[in-house]
Length: 160
Image (cartoon, rainbow, N blue to C red; front, side):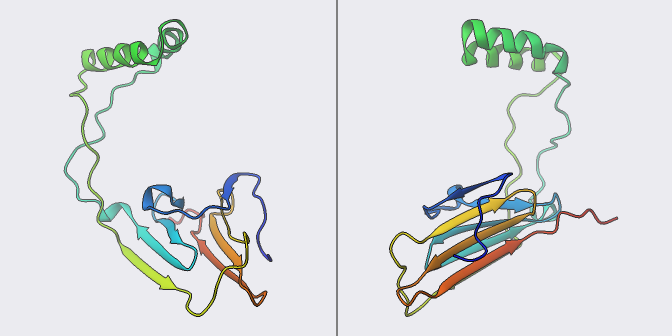
């Protein structure tokens, strides 16, 4: 399998993402991509912040950093649930209105494609995300020993 490697900063799997929740993702803060689906039928969704339906102001989260040592101590002594309750109480005291739902997403673009007239050879399917390079790679070999490779790349360079 050419061009497949095990990334130093990333994740890989020999199982496909059945649902979008299992997708491998890449992004740069301005554009994001997720790739999922059966190896022979892939789905690519692109998104950008401008395509979220704005509804909830998310810039009102209080500064809870001063309470972090006590939060960690409560996790260790009493467990996560007690610590989370403590954190929520401190946030509320500082004016946090409570749990708010994130803005709903409206995808920028979805592309679906299929590989026809081919069968995956054995357990050759691999997928990975390299966080450092900003790339998702899916690859497999077919019964004729041909390598199929898809790369999804998001440029991580900031543009001004």
